[in-house]
Each structure stands twice: as structure tokens, then as C-alpha cells.
Length: 627
Image (tube, rainbow, N blue to C red; front, top):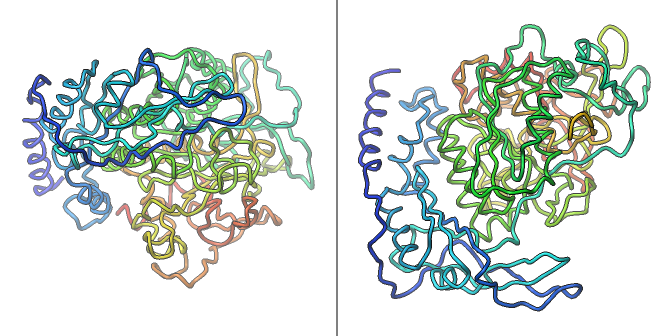
């Protein structure tokens, strides 16, 4: 580190020091005169026509855990920092900040957060807490106190035996807190994330799960649904088999020096049991594992197959990781997810995280969780952390109630958090491998999975690494009604073409796919790349786009040139792919809504899938990383 970098870091620490010593009493009161808007809009809650009761007041016996989001002091500066960290001539190049440094430079001060906490206390809220980066204040209250504190009305209805509630008028704060409080989460349980995993529709030949560790598993093809001209079409894969398929060659590093995290909810006690069973069966090393509790414990086990999939594939394709953290929150409600993300950011323990869930981006925008989470993701990126997120399994539609794995079955819009410019959005492919010959199980080709998500956001801005011509469709919002383009990358997701053999309630297994597979798989691949670079790559998005920018033949910034791959694989359509640096450029297939894959970046598959061995060699040439 040069002298200027040292001076900058020292200055940040000096600024941060007083915040840590700020007062912890919330006893002072704030007078309320008039009200100011927040980003939390009214929930269009209405009595449903069937099996529902009319809207009524939410009982005060229902505790509300409120997450109040505070605005950054310098949001624009925090965004500019990301670009500076990937500009080799800049003093901030590869100078990734600590949580304390970032907070001191960009986030609300401790005294500002205390002012919000004091207001909540004056309104009768209890269990008040301030997150270390001052971006979130949490507290508990009943509906009456929440209504009074935020000048709103909370109503409830019942449908299919479940009570839904929400603020039917916008959430407001006293004018003294205008601009400081940007959103109020937890006033509704109607907005929540949904997982993106799907069980296969067919029953492949049974795996011999009573036969002990499968030490030769990586050198054998998966049990194919059918073999056509020597190509395995459909079959359940194990992590070692994905390693072979995506070219984790002998010289490729494992993820041994990198820590990863999975965002989860509910009762996760079975997850480690399933992980240990899977590791033993597939002859993989046991990874160090910890559960990080966030919020109130939950008995929900409905997401077990999801969290099993996420943990087993991310650590499995990495072969080894330094540590696997399972962040466990109370529910998939927006407020709980925001707090979970905040803990991952403030802990700063894992270089990568995975979110295999999402909701329509307009809902995340409407309740303000998008604004709150984007601030957290921005800080994570500045700290050198990367969150991977599933783009969804309904084509260009994000489900409100449940994903079906088929196109045209969800709301026709993109999923958040995948649309955030500060995450890596992962789409899905159908992977086919060689079934016999000299390389059984090796890569044959891929095409876009018919149900993968992808598209252009209508509410999120495109980051600079997309608007330089690599992504020919991404524009700044307002230039065509579109903004941030996704997917960024893609990997196997087809629940019928290339699902993973996941241990769920050991020793039972299920074939599971979806972008819930491709996203944690990408995180595991990134752990390998980070370990090979001593965890100095930082935020993955600009680095990966920079690799593509170096190897694509089109002039950087061109919006007319259609990339032609350096070379082409020998696979036949629809599995023929192009090779651009460490990427397999997906050329065929679509997501069922007329959005096709093609040469260069595209919405279903982004830059393409990753060849692990090739990317380890090529990543040093990223035009945005300076390696």
C-alpha cells in the first residue's frame, strides 16, 4: 500500500473513532409537528373474494419487529467509490474498506441513528437496537404504536388460514427525521421473498447411497436420462461431477482461503447433518461451518431443500472453503431479509454470499426494502464482498406467490435482489456433458434454460461496467425506460436437464434445480477464483465484466458491433457455445418469452457460464481489476 492509501485509511479510522464512543441512551424526546414521506408506500391490501374475511385492524397482540432504514450521508460518493476501486491509477484502487471505515465516510453518524432510536423510544417501542453501520435501527411495537409513530393505518385480512397485514397508507416520519429515515420495514408481511428451486420431474436411476464414499464419482458420468450420440441428455449431478463439467482442472485452486455465506431462514438444524452426509458420500472434505442467528428463532422447515442445495453445491464445487456461514433469519419477509443482509455486511466475515430468493422488483421498491438493501450491498461491494442472487425461474417473470419453473407463470417483471447493481445476478442454463469416450462427464455444451429469469430493470440504474457497450441493451434509466440489465453470468439450472443430487433429510436425496442451483454454484466458483488471488479480487461484477471486455473482439463502448467468439466449441446446436476468455458464451435457447441467448451478453445468460480453469488464468486480464 502506498503512502496516499495509508493516509486515506488513517483518516477514515480517525473519523470512525468518535462514532464508536457515541451516547447509547435514547432518553431524549423529539417533538412532532408535521410529517414527511418515506419510501415505504401503501400496501394495496384488500379483502380477497374467496375464503377471506373483510379488512380489519391488526390486533395489538401481534408484535411487529420494525426495521427502520436510514439514508447514507453520501450515497453518490459511496457509488463512485466502487468505480475508483477498479481504476488502477486511482488512490483507492483495490483499497477495500472495513465496515468502520465505510461507515465513517458515507453512512449516518451514530448521533443520527441515536436520534431515530430516541424517537422510537418516545413512542413506546422496545428492544431498540442500532446496527454497527448506522443504516438500520430495529425495534418492537404493537400495531397501535406503529400506526402512531409512522402516521399510518395497519389493516389485516385472512386468506387460506393465514393472516396478511400491511400499512394501507404510506409510512411517514416527523419532519425532523426527513431524509434521515428513508424506509420503514416490518409494517407488512405481504411482501416477502420466494425461493427459486425446483425438484426434477423424472426419477433417474437410484444412486447407491449405502455404498459408502464415492471416491470415483468425479470421473464417472451422471446417471443419464438418455444418451444421444454419446451426449448425456438429462441426469442428476454431484458437486464433483459439476467440477469436471465446468473444468476444475488439476491446476485450478480450490476455495480453501475464502469464506462464503448462505442467506437462509427458519429451523436450519438439519442442514449441517445433510451437509456432513453429502460430504462423506461424495468424498469431499468437511468444511468449517457456523450458523449466524439473526432475529427471532423460527420453527419453519419448508426451505430445507433450498438451504441444503445452497450449502452443498457452493462448498462442493469449491472443493474446500475456509469457512461456510449459514445466516439464519426469522422469515423471508423483506424486513427480516434486510436485517440478515446487514449482519453479513457488518460482520464482514465472508468474501461472498448467496441469496437464492427474490420478489418482483416493484414490490421491493414499493416498501422501501430495495433502497435499504442497496445501501447495504453498496457497502459490501466497497468492502470487497460479493452477493450472488438468483434471477428467478419463471422466464422474465418473478412470482408473487410461488414459482412454478415454467415461463409465463409469474408477474412479468424482474426479481430483486438480482436487479440490484451491487450484486451478481445469476441466470440458468441447460448443461449437457459427454457420456463416454476419453472424458466422461466433461463439458459438451449449454443452452439457455427455458425458465431462467433475466431482463432490464425499470427502477435500478445500470452500473458503469454495463453501460460501456459490453451489455448493449443496458442504459441509464430514462433513456429507454430500462436500466440495469441482468443476468450477469449463468450456470446450470435446468431441474430436468442438469439438476443436482441433493441430500435432504439424510440419507434421502432429491434432484433439485433452478437458479437456486446456478447462484450458489457461481459463489463456489468465485471462492476458487478469490483463493487463487489471495482474496484481492473484490466485488465480482466489475472484475468479470472486465474479463469479457478484454477478450471480446468489439471495441469497448461499441453498441453496433456484435461479438464473435474467439473460437467455437465442437458441440452441435443448441449446445454450441463460443469461447470468450474464461466464459462459455451461450448462443442458443431462450427463456420462453422471446428473449433469446445469442453472441455476446444477453438477458437469459449474461456473459455466459464460467470455465474454472480458463477463468483462473484469464481473470488477471480484467480491464476493471488491474491484475
